[in-house]
Length: 303
Image (cartoon, rainbow, N blue to C red):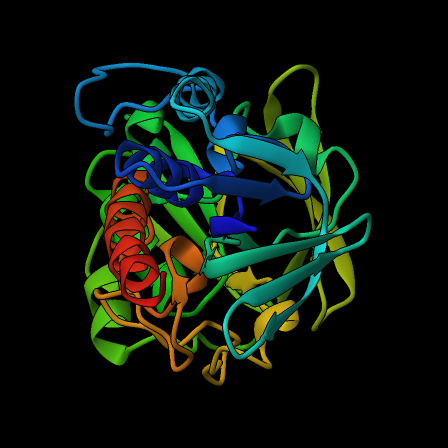
């Protein structure tokens, strides 16, 4: 029986483990894929305090090492269910069952991908999912934003300040984002729009150099040279295993505020998996600290 079982070994989960271990609580971290979370796929991180420049893989490794050195345990397993028992919680994975007095869900969310061949190959080499994180690397370069919702338009506004040219590529005949954002973009000389168009292929040697686009209205395919793309077609939380113990909003995120408290006593949600407006490494770590302190208080109250 652990004091705290943490689901997810990204910045939120690992920060929670660090804080919990410093409070002398027994901690088990369950991770289904890669220790360090999605940040490990970022070739360069320049907005994490204390590190002017660090690779995502190195940052993730430092977080993992710190948690392990403090005595946290880590298991590789995919959680399929969390059950709330009268005096403890059961976390069931594909390979085992774990018990804890409390649970912190830090399962994160994934950027929706285009699902194209070579997409993963070009991540960090022309394909990005975060304009705030990677936009500075494309100063004075020609880029495209894939998507037409608020996130895509906000990304395009941000990128148009530094990039030489920004093209918004939307699969519909119109953008679905706020009219105000559309008006801002249409007033900028270095921004244009391509509608009724989807990306068929990503081309390049070691770095992305062009897109093969398909005009769905005229059924025509054409090559579009570009230095990079920012994919902004939404995020996908992976909270299905927790829906019996955590209330989810219409988009699948766990309903929890800055306190990280969910609707079930002893279960907390931290990082990108919860309802929030900013999803960055630093905000995930902040959530992890809040969740750990809340879980420690809960554990002290039931022990």
